[in-house]
Amino acid sequence: MLEQLLIFTRGGLILWTCKELGNALKGSPIDALIRSCLLEERSGDSAFNYDAAGASYTLKWTFHNELGLIFVAIYQRILHLLYVDDLLSMVKREFSELYHPKRTYYEDFDDIFRQLQKEAEARAEEMKKSKPQAKPVESLTKKEGQIANKKKGVLLAGKEKVSSKDDASEGNHTNGHKLENGNSNGRELGTKTTHADVKKSVPESGAFDVSKLRKLRSKASKKMDTFSKAPKVEQNKKTTKKNRVWDDSPSESKLDFTDPMAEKGTEAVVVVDQGESMMDREEIVSSDSEIDEDEEESGKPDNKKRGWFSSMFQSIAGKTVLEKSDLEPALKALKDRLMTKNVAEEIAEKLCESVAASLEGKKLGSFTRISSTVQAAMEEALLRILTPKRSVDILREVHAAKEQGKPYVVVFVGVNGVGKSTNLAKVAYWLLQHNISVMMAACDTFRSGAVEQLRTHACRLQIPIFEKGYEKDPAVVAKEAIQEASRNHSDVVLVDTAGRMQDNEPLMRALSKLINLNGPDLVLFVGEALVGNDAVDQLSKFNQKLADLSTSSSPMLIDGILLTKFDTIDDKVGAALSMVYISGAPVMFVGCGQSYTDLKKLNVKSIVKTLLK
Image 1 (tube, rainbow, N blue to C red):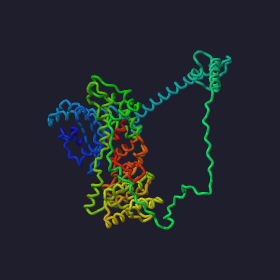
Image 2 (image 1 turned 135 degrees about the horizontal axis):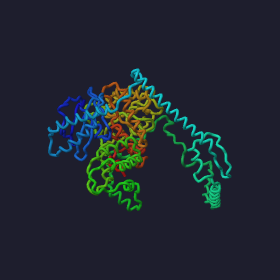
Image 3 (image 1 turned 90 degrees about the vertical axis):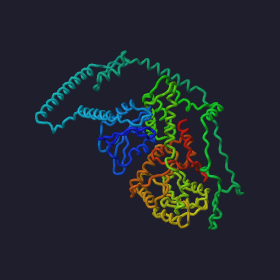
Image 4 (image 1 turned 60 degrees about the vertical axis):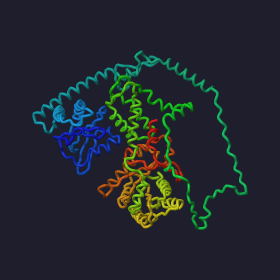
């Protein structure tokens, strides 16, 4: 039985609900559908499951893109209602005839819906009856079993007769048939061969002509002779390596780079001042007209940009409504384009399905290109996905925590070798430029050299570091570091953790313990911009493990993403889209170099432009 059926506009105005169903829904499944599915461009999915507040619902929906209406049906997940899809399509068809933009009440639709529901339920019952299930042999009566066995015997006997006839005819063909070679010498077949096989091996024109084969061989040999007689291209002479001259006099450049101060037992501290961080610079995105002008000046137009749509999409004159068949070629080309930009295949496919759901049934004006319509819809979808749904103003949150008298705690997590410690130092440098006191916590007690690496960054940045060495519980080290920061009135604590693969159960359990024990304000996942499909696997499993291993009813998951090595990927920026889509967390920082200033914000418009060009 349905729990509820609603009709509302894309702006959120509810036009009609079924009063007879009228069941009080637990939680807010509609809000969850809009927030987690429709706004995240997952409208191409067939259903949405809602689990919260002790309720378990399944939600199905359909769109009327021309009128801007959404039809949603809600029912208990344990029920498998076969008529919901059929009912939604009928409600959509009937309600669209009554709809008027200035009208907000539709009491007259109650009787129509009641009739539609009865028709859908009756149709579902007929479909069940039209597919009778065969009775098992054990449940048959004695008489029915005998009849069934007789039928099986007759069928088996018939099959044996047919197969024996086939074998006999096959034997006659194989015994009586001979192959002829080029010398007209007949040779009987030694193996059993069917007539069809003999037909394939012998051409219909008769015996195999060896003279044709000899002519082909002679032509091939002539070609090889001409190729071998062709003049060879002289190869470039290899440059010989110059001999090294060894002098008694020492060279000007020293090969020993050890610090002379270290020999005396004192560490040399180099204070870093590399200028303004890229986080505080505004990135300017050039417009399409500027790009076109640059191409015209260079004389080398981007064939990929101009050719991937133009070959298959033409303007439509007089076509009013878009159908799925019209969109399929456009979406296939768009999916291929996204995958070449390093977007995960699964996510590219879901995005295209969502765009198709938002465009199907929409009216097009005369001489409007499908290419521009599809690209505009995809651009809107990408902007919605990449635009943060939560505040990413860390400086404001740091000052809010400072007013409450507690340090702002950021935990950096991720797989091995992605650059957590280096980018932690970049974030620390950016915070120092805004007069925020920072303390580092060396909670990577697993990897050798991790504490020394973080200590080096702390010395160069002139900030305190809390460390307890190796083989300690990282959760306890982080707790003591936060307590130390409270005593010293440090504004921010940056917690460095060990790199771990998403399938490493002991290390993931230790990470979950660290987060649950300390309750950080921000959990940053550090990932490489180089990865494609692996980014989806890493993020989804990190979130899943943090949820499964948490002892709290509301576990802390990944709040933001820090993308590293962004300067090495050229235009393959799809990892940013894949990570945001799979987790719903925004990209808060982008690492783009080796120095402390090489940290910047993600320019959403620039990413969208790069993905679609």
